[in-house]
Image (cartoon, rainbow, N blue to C red):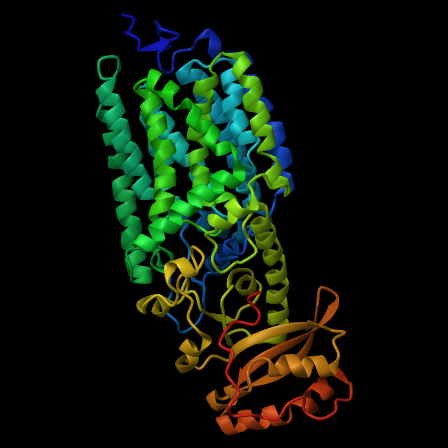
Length: 585
């Protein structure tokens, strides 16, 4: 017996929608080719915006230590392991890459980009298969992704953003949109990956399963299986796996949630306000996400599947608001919501070719912010500024440049630190990713990602005076009881004059001798270049530290081979100690 079909209202008349997972003339080659066409601009934009952000190196350091048999830990030694990553499965894959002798810095962005291509094609297939959209609608849906700088930038980046977006969409498509009797099995596999990919992954599985139950209940008279069975089966598969993972986390890290959640997430009115600014600012800066809202009415006409799409399109930014936003470029936290905005835009265009032309024009303009051409007025960007401690970063492209440049600079700094220090020595610093990955120092993290004790104190900065993810930054003096080997560092090129080096060394703050710290200068060679590494190093006693300060000029002259006159300033006990991080900028 042929099963009944759902109905939709189009142009004032009621017509049947193609049943879910039933081949229709609109689900053939033309629509599929239309979706694949958008891989071309996506590939170009992805190559243009290819980068690896500093946070990715945090995960990669865990992966390297795990591959070396030391366990998934950031610091090796006496410190208890702390879960300073939020992407367990991604970290495990990177560990396998390390074990095979490859570099995760190279391989993981490629895997992420493959997930981006797969997601773009999956959205085009869903638009055609489940909503019966023709070539114009599929082009509009995949165009929102293929021409999106945000989607392209986070197709790389080194983080699990795109794998998360892909697995989330697969679970949604298989549970909410599909009525294939075997779809729940595919959804279960994707849901397990989703639950292990990110700390919030299990919550997303519950959200989609609950949404699926509601949508399937509304469709219960047309379904081939009981409305509750697929979501219930998926939850039954995922729940014990998540329980095992949480149990392992507790036994190994001594906590039931990742330390990153404690370091970065907190609920307050200020953070909600900042999260709202974050969503608005990214939307204004990137322009095209608002196009998805054109499909809201069309989603109502495709009841109840359209309701599922609209719910997810709103759920992702709602989550971003709840956690207070994110400082990273191109709205990283909003990227998993783009596939649902894309489907909404496709529903708006449908088979109306006359709507496609203006939509593609706007989507084309949306490429410009990814190339550094800002469309949003500067005063609007300033009004919505949410990166409070990054004064010059209003635009998303400026933020991307900042992140890409820092990833490269801090990688070089990490190699210089490795050349000028010994494994097992400790360093206090704020940016810990690339610096930590390229050396084997014990990193005492001012932001508390890998040091649990930082998160046991009150916020150092009120939420609206910092950028998302940087609310807890402790001064270096916080770690004085830990007796770190190095309290601070700076780096100068090999051609720097002895006088400048002496002045830079003094910038660490003369008052530090009272804490037992004094500057030392070491010359190292990295990347076929010579560098001077300035370290604020611990001495045996305050008296020894004062002696090092007093002979600083002579030490600098000995390292550089250049004569140096008198001290640029006398040793002054009353000089104010600089407790910011000189190397963080």
